[in-house]
Image 1 (spheres, rainbow, N blue to C red):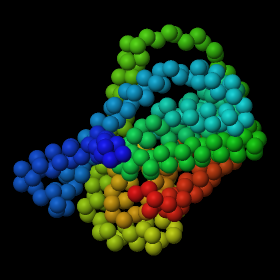
Image 2 (image 1 turned 90 degrees about the horizontal axis):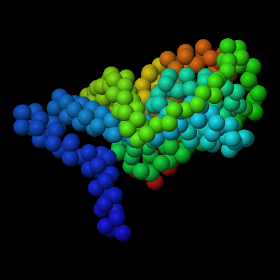
Image 3 (image 1 turned 90 degrees about the vertical axis):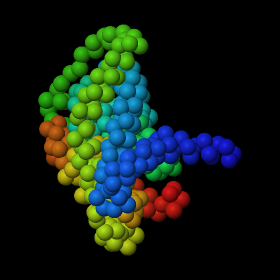
Image 4 (image 1 turned 135 degrees about the vertical axis):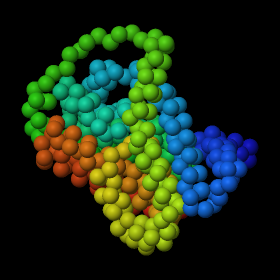
Length: 337
């Protein structure tokens, strides 16, 4: 058992957490005359370490996930979802959302295509909620920062929000609140070209390059904000606003995430810095969920596809779900970290 724990700790710290990289960067900066325990040196160390770590993990994860995703083109996904009914369909849709693109704006076109193809509205919304909120990449990245307990719990609760949200929307019978051009649309069942291993690897590598170009600015911004929070903002300010003394921290964090636009890769450095400064675990995870699921740009895009009432229902379900998850994490934080 001790050997197993030692092996897992090594995997957690050195492989996923890349502590070797942190030590290497720290030694290099120290050799250059910078004090990595000071504000400036600490900020530079944080920025270099998190940027390199996230981009390395990003490349590996996207390569693996895109290879898996090559087996689930939209038409095949539609056929898979069409075989299931009731809550089972919502569960499958939420799970399929974990192998799709990493941000809500990337998921909305797929949501429109599935809705146009005649899939039940609740099923397509389960997919739309889970796709940006809980993907395979988020599981690995959260493990690298917060540990496996937090990561697994986060993903499970995100899937629960997606399934319940889709089920509620289905039972409210809001099909007429989808814009007419989508409801009257159609999807052609075009035969899928057979892909071989090299084709799938080429596709996966193209996705790595394309996604890296898209998310790199958000990663850099997120890491810069995280470095600033970690080294320049006094701890007592974070604790007073987002610590155990403020019962509204989860609500503040969820609302604060809405105007932003980033994916899981851009929000993790901010969440990491907030947690290190004394913010509650539920607060930082609510912030991450709010940014990835309810960002203002994605809501503007979604408004083009659905009417205000359905959009309001979607936002309310997600916001309430995210806040409940945040307070749940706060309640069990001592068991997870």
